Amino acid sequence: MKLMVLSGALMLGLLSTQPVNAASIYAGQARAAAVCSQCHGIKTPSADAPFPPLAGRDFAYLKSALEQYRDKTRKNDIMNALAGSLSDDDIANVAAYYAEIKP
Image (cartoon, rainbow, N blue to C red; front, side):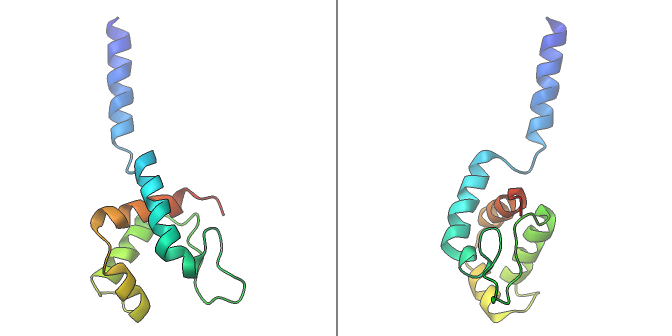
C-alpha cells in the first residue's frame, strides 16, 4: 500500500512539472486558429508566404518570442500589434499548441 501511495505521489509530482496540459493546448489551438494561422498556417504557411512555420518549434522559444513581440523588445509592426493583445496565458497556450504539432 505504501508503495502505491508513493508511486502515485511521484506520478502526480512528475505530471505537475509539465508546462503543457490538454486544456492549454486546446485554448492555444483556438487562439492560433483565430490569429496566428492566418500568416503562419497550422503545419506550414502557404508556399509563397514569407512567414516562418511554427509547428514543432520549441515551447520555450515560441513563448519567449511572443513575449518579446508583445513587450516590443523584438521589433515587427505586425507581430507587435498582434502579440500586444496576448496575455501570459494566451502566449503559453499558443506556444504549447504549436510545440505539440508534428510538422
